[in-house]
Image (tube, rainbow, N blue to C red; front, side, top):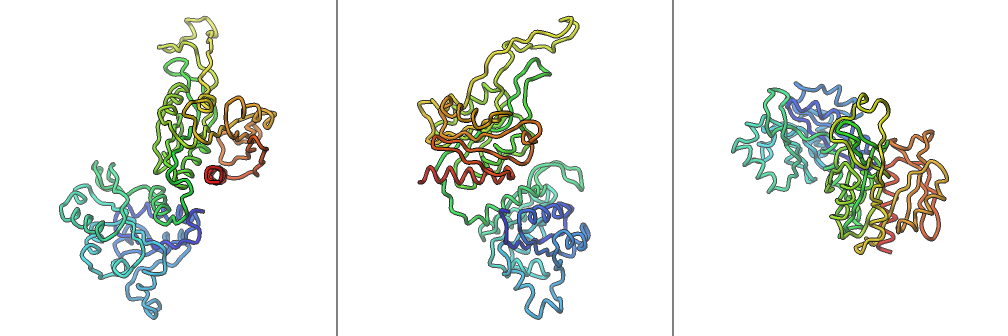
Length: 402
């Protein structure tokens, strides 16, 4: 609920990317925001006010001169009664009006009257975006204090052309809104953090590998939470189906040895949170060609060798971070095994969880952990992995700043 109690005035202007605004409304509301929608006349050619209003659960404002609204000068009220004005999509026409102080409809009048932060998500044909007039308008808007996200490079929906002009994706826009409205203190400002996340894939041959069920959700959530707390974060991620957290330097690896090397390259650091489910073993000599059943007359022998212990390496390293936290995924004797790892790995804390099949935690969206330290154990209740991340980062900040 990062945007809880925030009021976002969303202006939808007339472009094919307006269809993305429907998902954008949903994503903003998921995070606790109230969305007040405003549509231009042209926007109605692409999405309906009925759809927008239903998703926003709010009246859609379109007309500049609405009898009921103008009793209290509706465009002024809308311009001020919000925390941020978001224009998505922002067309060349609307940007031109803003840059030149023109106001002949509700949307442009609100933009001229507002004293709130304004975030623009441009969307237009690449040739339009590269026009000198549009570039001048964008530059002037930046000078005037408007914030931009995008446009992005890709294929245009309306023409199939490739180039820069696509509206940023809804989740990226939401993240930018969160950043602009984030007034929370930054307890980890000036601190450097390393996080590992996801599984590792240890090759058997070019098409097979040893892996595990880790999704990377918890590690990525912790990296994002550390970044929001002000830390400079390097995330070393194994193969996952997750987007890189915004504002986080992400290094992509596959094998445990690659992950170890990337972590060591990121030293020195103040914080290390080793969340990745690193494979304990790898095939001693991976085949350069696909192993054929016929060649072995049955099941091939695959001698294994031990992978590097990244947490232990960091816990005993000459450049050891001030705070080292490891994760222990266990299927039995969770606390006992976690305590044993605490000393053996040289960690300050072990975050242990039960990943036996019946819990559904491995690869799931929730987690229930025990935080094991040298002075005791805290048992945290079942919660969303994002909540676990926020609580863990709060603990980290308390330890480093206490």
